[in-house]
Image 1 (tube, helix red, strand yellow):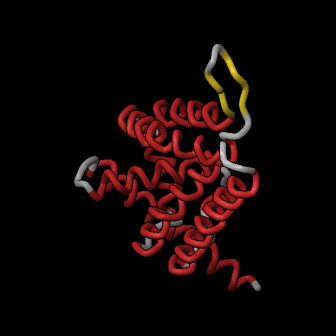
Image 2: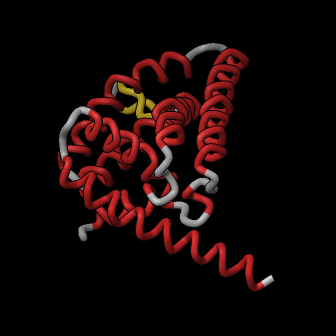
Length: 180
């Protein structure tokens, strides 16, 4: 199992309920966009071009995603390239408007996440492993690609491993309950 399969499987173990996955299709993009908005305000001019913290974070995340999977890295680059100009425009608004939009989007995104985990009956993946915060956007992209009918081999491997991990997590929880 390669690194991409491991990371997606580990994340998917917390996201096997279709309602939870659906809420992540809304919540994760909102959270990522809000972080873009919040970090697009901090920047420095370099040869007439503003290098923002958001731009640096996006480039680093695309490099990371590309190192895991070239197709997913490229698709994430396209998504970020479309989203960043909107986030940058929001960052240029007045302080109150910028913060209201950015923080409001962040909070609503997390509400969707927690509603999804209510259906799942599992805590978010990042609670056990902070890498889940970086893998969440990649997981949503992968799920979208799977919905379109592509990368079925990856989906099958991911789900098989995720179900085994979930069974182990559930058994561990039961053992802890019985030990009390």
